[in-house]
Amino acid sequence: MNSETQTRLRHAVDDLFERQTEFLSELVAFPSTRGQEQAAQDFMARAFEERGLATDHWTIDIDDIRGMPGFSPVVGDYEDAVNVVGAHRARSGKGRSLILNGHMDVVPEGPHDMWDTPPYEPRLDDGWMYGRGAGDMKAGLASNLFALDALRACGLAPAADVFVQSVVEEECTGNGALACLQRGYRADAALIPEPFAESLVMAQVGVMWFQVHLRGLPTHVAYAGSGSNAIEAALPLIAALHEMEARWNADQAKPAHYDHVHHPLNLNVGKIQGGDWTSSVPAWCVFDVRMGLYPGQDMAAARADIEATLNNAARQSDFLRNNMPEITYNGFMAEGYALADDTGETARQAIATLEQAHGAITGQALDKVAITATTDARFFGLYADTPALVYGPRAEAIHGFNERVDLESMRRVTQATALFIANWCGVEPV
Image (cartoon, rainbow, N blue to C red; front, side, top):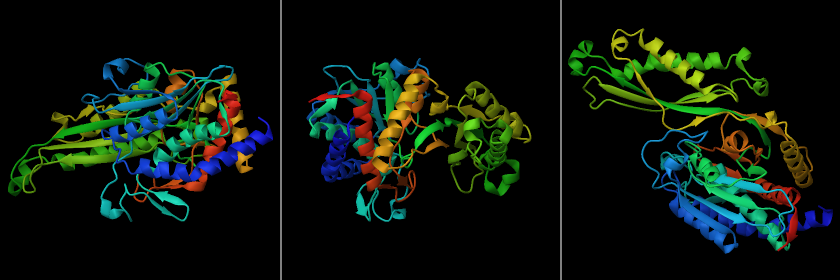
């Protein structure tokens, strides 16, 4: 791409940026937690249609994806799980095709009185937009769409097919992205603008979710010694899991991508429930756990280690050894993915193209990082032979209170994405 076209694209993003910020604000106002994404997805579908993209708006059928590699187990049906894809079909088809992926679902916001302002009333302050999902990852959805708008404003269109995906389930299974693969959306590369501060993610961990179910022996608290407290029984099991976590993080266990990371695999007890009455020894307890996995780590072996850890700890309890914990899996069963391990020519060219675009916009070299979270990139990289580039704006407090995204960072990412599309796909007149 010549320097004149680069300059025109940058200016086009600038000219559209006020509208992009308004668009992001409208998106953030949707409380699109899991199961509540439909109105926001309708909004995205309208945005695609207004731009002349062929719009595919469908409810995920769990039976369509259950047998596919990368499927994560779920409870219940998917009547409320809606994906939207907008397809640009090139006339010439002379370039390389691209998936622009982002997720609409956001995590629960927690107590609203612990936010400075309501989480679904987006607020602008000193160059930041605050609100649940502003960073993770509605700014990325806006960036994908407005990068294409910038090309159109310059009278250009990608010279290869581009599929703009707005998916659900990223925060709990990834089955939304998997459903796009099942639907037939494939391309030469994928770009996912998750909020990792304008760095390229070269490795990301996998994630496994599981529940531990414990049964106690209820009695009146006056006779507590004759019962067995299911909530207190959970404590030594949680301690045993943290010992396993330390073992998995030992230096000799780390792959090369994580040599420099002190503690890459994090275990989190994210939810606990139990008991029925304050003055009764609790008869039951359930706690939910998230555990990270290295790229390439065998998932069956990881499950076996988790189960052995819990069962061995339970055998130390006089009560639990005769009432062993039940372990169920519901949610993430996600392998780790390392773009750095893809030595193919397509991956090399995709990375080089993004490096060039990032450098043209920022004047700096592209940082390359290994992260301790997961994204939907694994579906493309592991199961579709498609290099997946995770590169998005700077955000803070994602999954926390007062989540916010740096708007100037979103502008730069949108400009870099526009240049990346133009160089990767080629361009043709609108």
